[in-house]
Image (cartoon, rainbow, N blue to C red; front, side, top):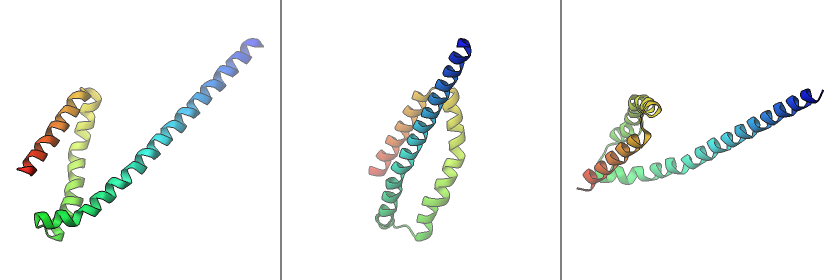
Length: 109
């Protein structure tokens, strides 16, 4: 009798822990989604100054923000994610920061 009670209590504790983990993960995803909205709004606010500065047409601007953006993530997202699962994430982060820095330097020159 006592052994069955301990097993049931242990099972209930595991369910409680699992439920708490699910709630924490859900809250984390929700926070990340809400943090993404201001970034998207900021890009939309900056489209007109970017268009004027680079002398882009509406078609070119639409291509940069739509098709090119989607193709870039569709092309490079899966290989980078696969490498992140199998390789060293520090290396991926270092390469990404290096490429970002190089593009910033090229834009400023």
